[in-house]
Every structure is written in C-alpha cells, then in structure tokens.
Length: 245
Image (cartoon, rainbow, N blue to C red; front, top):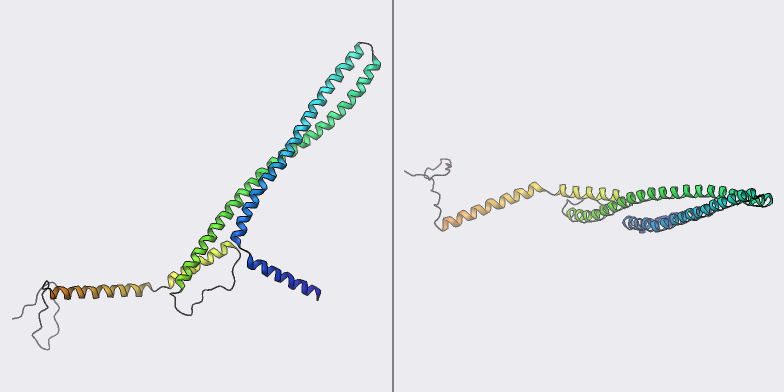
C-alpha cells in the first residue's frame, strides 16, 4: 500500500511539473546557467595557475640553495675543513631531496594546468554549441506560437466537424513547431480557392454588364437590333451590326 501511495505521489508531482514546464523558458535559463559557469571556471583555472607559479618560485629557491651549498662544500674541502664540509654536504642532500619533490609537484601542477585549459576549451565549444541550439529552438518556439495563432484563425473557415486540436501538448520545441506548421498548412489547403475564384469572375461579368447598360443609356453604345424572323434561331454577331432588309 505504501509503495502504491509513493508511486501515486511521484506521478502527481511529475504531472504537476510537466504542466508548468515551459521549454522556451527552460532553454533561456540553460543559456544563463552556461554563461554563469564561465567565471567560476576561470577562477578555478586561476587557482591552478597560481599553484604552478608558487611551485616555480620554490623550485628556483631550492636550485639556488643547492648551488650555494655545493659551493660551500667545495670551499670547505679546499680549506681542509672536512667537518664543515660534512655539515654542508648533509644540508645539500636535504635540499636536493626537497628540490626533487618540488620538481615532481611542479610537473604535476603544470599537467593539471594544461588539462584545465583543455577542459575550458572543450567546455567553451560545447557551451557555444548548446547556446546556438537553444537560441534556434527559442526562435522556433516563438515562430511556432505565431503559426499556431495563424492556424487557429484559418481553421475558423474550415468545414464543421474537422477537429485539428491536439489531446496533449508536446514538451519538445521541435515537435511543437512541426505540428503547428502542419496545422497551418492543412488550414490553408482547406480553403475553397476555386469557389472564391468563380465568385470573383461572376462579379466581374456582372460589373461589365452594368457598365454596358450605362453606356447604352448614355447613347455611347447602340442597342442590339431586334430579330425579324419568327421561329428562326438567334443569330450571334460579334463586332458588327445586324442589317434588317
């Protein structure tokens, strides 16, 4: 029973999150999050570089101490002070070991710094790619909203009974764009363009007849001559007057 209750709560929470989730807003927030990571990454790389610089300074100090102690050991030997030379030699051995450890740490720090720079380059490439994709998707989403409005307007002229609504809003921006484009195309194709063209042509013919009647009333156009023969079929004349004998 408890497992069923937890599953029901998770499903309710998932439904609630899905209902308030706006892909366009989430993509815009993702762009801001990616941009916010750049200063943090730069700060981390600066810390790694500072460690390299510190180790380099320590390395130079150890090298200087080794050179000075080496010179003191040689000078003590030349002066016949083997006891003093032994003391300097012991210190020299310790400095050489410290230098070796420092050199090893410096090499690791340099490698870490190079890796950090490579990670940053890879991150910047990925950030630019994702940012461009997100911006394109946001533009598609805004265009999809406009197309949806156009489709809704055009669908008001379709035949009754056509149901082009959708049971469920798709969460992906690309799918929503494709559906709205399809809806607009279907709405445009559903308009009876041929009937509109015929009606427009009929209105033009009627207008021409009215103009012709006005010209006849104004004496600018001769009235058609009456047909004298009874029972004869109407004789069509084009571009000439009918002469009655």
